[in-house]
Image 1 (cartoon, one colour):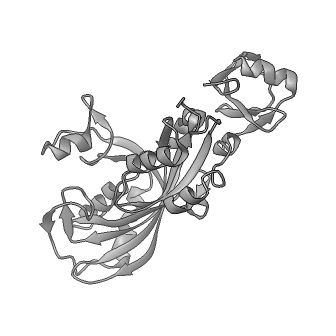
Image 2: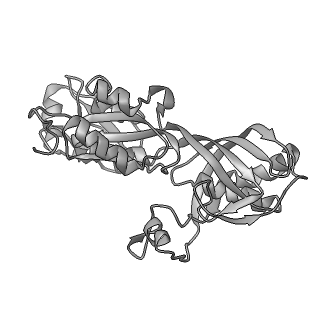
Image 3: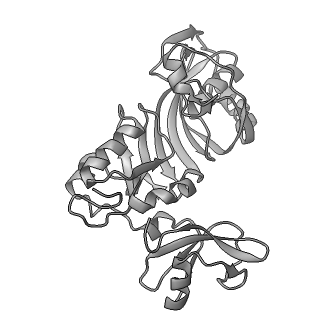
Length: 304
């Protein structure tokens, strides 16, 4: 079976918006869709923790080459912060490492500390994250009992909305968070607990949006298995968040060979990546404009 070809030899490519269930790793979802579509070439954009649910974008065939442009998009999450209990993973799956009742904490106290977590902030990645330190993923080292120094990373949080607050010795707050790529909501939960003079962990998390793809468009694994072709979005839809330029047949042929164009030839003034679509509506390539020329970032037309 060739990459990008289904079990019947037909070309299969595009994007699937998955509603990931709890208890599945992102890799588990990829493995399941490899079986459903009969493909080897399957990948995902942006890891979602095993206990978390919600939007996971999965690319099939040549669409895997577009995933890096989706990983970098903004995210929206809904989650619940449990104050007064700390865990070694910063979420409910971990082992309790501290307990500090926080009965005096109320909604006004939470509102008072939230502004310090908005905008560009420094965040220390949790030990159970997928990033690599010295060539090894942190979660692999954590499973072996290691704790290593992690350099703070700059992330962006655009909005934190308190949707509900439950008071008590161990208060809980349900939050809606809109943030940039690379933000750890479990780290945000732990940092909020510390800011309020105690500790906290993330009780549960659901991802509501990745870039332009809301959870309303997501399909469960069972729904995908029932109608695999029906839920598959074409590659032009996979990058619908990028500016789009439609070209004629002659230009399409040049694009399919990775031609470099004068900076004014393809129109538009956006400095970032843009999609080039042929007369048949298919995505041909992603281009980016420099000072003097428009150059291809990814060429999809004509194969691999």
